[in-house]
Structures are given as C-alpha cells and as structure tokens.
Amino acid sequence: MGGHRETWLEPLDGVDTRSGPNTALRFFSSSVPGNGLGAYNAEPVRILVEGGAQDGVAKGISGGRVVIMKGYNHDGKLIDGSVGKSLAYGGTGGFVIVQGDADSRACIRLSGTDVVIGGEISKPLNDSLGFIGARANVKGFLCEYMTAGRVIVLGDPGPWICAGMTGGVLYLRLQPHLNFDQAAIQRRLAKGAKVVVQEVGENDLKNLRELLTIYAEELKQNHQSEEAQKILNLLVDWKNTFVRVVPLGQQEDQRVATE
Image 1 (cartoon, one colour):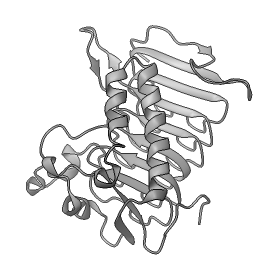
Image 2 (cartoon, rainbow, N blue to C red; image 1 turned 30 degrees about the vertical axis):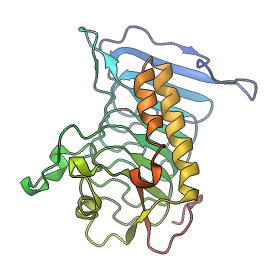
Image 3 (cartoon, rainbow, N blue to C red; image 1 turned 120 degrees about the horizontal axis):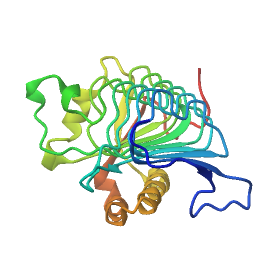
C-alpha cells in the first residue's frame, strides 16, 4: 500500500450512526491497496480509497460500502481512481463505487450489489480499429452471469457484456457525440447474450436517482463538489441520457438471485 499518508478506523463523515455503529477504513494520498480489498465486506464496514486498487475489490461483498476515488499526485492533480479485475465478483449486497475505470470481469455473477463505475469516455470512439476493450472504461465481460443488482457505467462498458445475464439491470449512458450510441451498445453485447436494450422509464428514474445521488455524495465528501454536480446534472434529461440492459422478458428489477 505504497504512498498512503494515513489509515484509520472511525465513523464516516455525514453518516447517521443512530441505527448502529459505522466503521470506516480510509486510505489517503494516492494509495493503491493490493488484491482483495473489501472482499466479503459486510455492514458496518465502509472502505474509502483515494488512489486506486488492484484485483478482486469487493469480491463477495454482502453489505457496507467500498468506494474507490481519485487521489492527488505529487503535483496536486486528481488521478486514477481505477481498479483491477473482478470488481464485486459474486456480490450479494452493499454498494460499490469506482470513480475511474475497471479491468475485465467487473460484476461477474453479481447477485444483489449496487455498483457505479464512473470512468468516462475521453475522446470519440472508433470501433473500426478493433480491440474495443483496449480503449474501454471496462475491459470486457461486464455483468457476465449477473442474477440481481443494479449497475451504472458512465463510460464505455467494453466488449462481451451481459453473457449469461439472467437478472438485475445495467444502465448505460448514451453519448452519441462520442460515438457511443445504440449501435455501439449492440456491438458490445456478448454473442448469444439473451438481453434487450430498452429506453428507461419511471421505475428506472428511482434507481438512477438513488445510485447517482449516493455517488455524488461520495464525490462531495472527497472535495469534488463540481464533479458531484456534473453527476447530478445527468438526471435532468435522464430519459435521453440513459438506456437499460435487462434479460429478455424481465420487466422489473430482480431483487433475488435466480441461480
């Protein structure tokens, strides 16, 4: 965990502890904890990292919160905020936030956890170059075998998404001006994935508002108020900003695993 300034356990700022204790594990100053950070995390533990993390973040999480934010480098600039492979693998509960990118196999076998991946597209996409995953914000196989939960990806979700997905919902942000449109999403679906890309409706607004508001709150606590407002602004024209990917025949969000 090179470079972290300090780490301690204490109640989180702004968290109501009247319903029970809340314990926070914080890593500052561009820390990069090793594999398995927050694996099998549960209430009341909440983990915050400013910097990044390696593989297996929040694997098997059943409660609490794991948040990976950008950290300040030696020049005072916010950088990184990304994680390695298998983010939230098999998660059954809790909340996971990654401000940056995620490597491959994020949200595999997700069964109830809420996940926000905030890495954004930095320049217009050119899928004709091939190797979509090399330039994506998630490197491949997102939401494979997902059975329940809610996931938002604010950038490019990468190739081979939603293979074997049987439940839950994936929200994607349309950005036609960056060549991320409905056609680009279709190119990213795994071959044989039994899912459908749909317009969002009123039931989705509740999900989007809840997930993005929590993300914005974490950004504010991390001294990124301007970025937090940008996230909340996505809700202004939510019907034209987001689409949802769900299994064929699923009309409502699933709340229990189906396998």
